[in-house]
Image 1 (cartoon, rainbow, N blue to C red):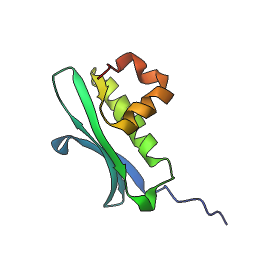
Image 2 (cartoon, rainbow, N blue to C red):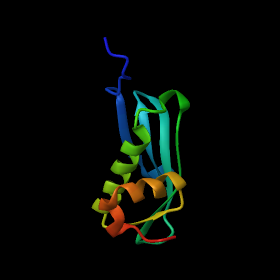
Image 3 (cartoon, rainbow, N blue to C red):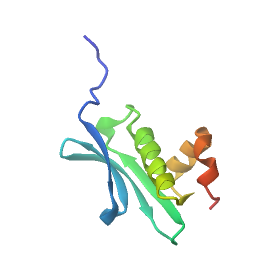
Length: 102
């Protein structure tokens, strides 16, 4: 039997009316990355958090990957005021082409 956490009920969703991308475990909100729209070209990520009970499972990284891919799909660019997102981008150069310095 494995002690690995079960991520099978985890979903990542964009909630534009709340300006954030969320991590959900069923109906339970377990994390999010919040953004603002400073202009028509940029999505500025300002804060990311995950419930401590879900820490260490890679959920924040998966959420940021999904969110940045969505921003790319919208044809927009990224600002990363959120320290987590900024650090994540330095390790994932595939998003450097759409990231502007803050």
